[in-house]
Image (cartoon, rainbow, N blue to C red; front, side, top):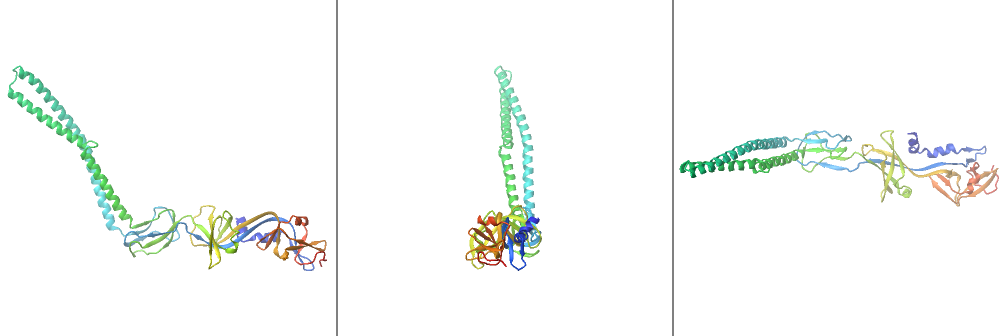
Amino acid sequence: MERKRYFIIGVTALILVVLLAVFTSGDEIKSYELNKTDFKETLSASGRVEAKNRIDMIFQKAGTIQEIFGVEGEFYKKGDPLIILGKVEEENDVDSKNLQLRMAQNNFNDTVNQYKIKSLNYEVSKTSFENIKLMYERSLKLYEAGGISQKELEDLLLQVKEAEARALMAEIEYQSYAPGGSVREKALIDIQNAKIQLEKAEIERNKKIIYAPFDGQVLTISKEAFSNVQIGEVGLVYSEEKSYITTDIDERDYQKVKAGQKAFIQFLNSSEILEGTVRDVSPVIDRTKGTIKVRIDLDTEVALKTDIGVNVEIIVSEYEDKIILPSEFVFQNPERIIINNNGKALVIPLNEYYRAQGYYVLMDQEIENYLGKNVIAVDLEDGKTIK
């Protein structure tokens, strides 16, 4: 945390002052010892937490608000109810459709039970027919031998036809109640239709409830309990749980900030500091402000309340083992430094350097020959005595 705080409050420059001793001689000439150190150039800006996937949740049916469960700034899971309208009529319709479904299911169960009965009846009728048919065939032989009369034979034939008709009817009923049969299929269709009607009724009932569409947070609620609403009115504004940071940088710093750079974010409403990464830099300049918007994603998934102000510190450059010099010790036109060379002024021109936050990062190889010596904040000609 101390390392994060170091970057956030801009201590980099102050540490350099401590590490590279700045001191004043007896004649009040400020001097600075040349040494190598690590340096991080940062860019500070203010920003805010932005909502990801911000959506307006509208009412799908008119009615009166019965209860508001959502609270602005709080987080909810997908499917949590946020606002409920009065839905007596819709609840009654759901109850009615539930009853129809239960009746259809009971009818199907009766059909299954009837199938067992029809199956048994068919087997009995078929056996009876076969027995009577066998008896007729035997009687026919007796008739030919003069054992029975023609009338007895005709009566027996009539019984055969009646038994065959009963068996055929029993078979038709058995098959209609069997799987794939017309009676059972109709019972199944009735169940399916009842389910569809129940689903429609539940959809109409659920239209009077605003649910959380995904894990996220309520940003604003535009209605109060017991107020009347119309179809299409906005009930609340919702966003994803994972938010991101936006900040505006000066357009002059546009070339410094790039995707992938490390950033540190401090929230104005707390002392919490989080690490993030620059995701993208907008190519569009806000002409009214002269700024460019930068988006920063947090490195860890954290649920953040939106619209909270933050301070952002972006590390735009890092230098390791370099000579860093405060700009007050560099003279311009042309850029040069004055070294205290055993009491004499030694003018060293600067050819390779980089300006960073009031400092010069010196790249000239020649300057390394003077490590440990002091540069002074007085512009003197080469060879002049330093008083």
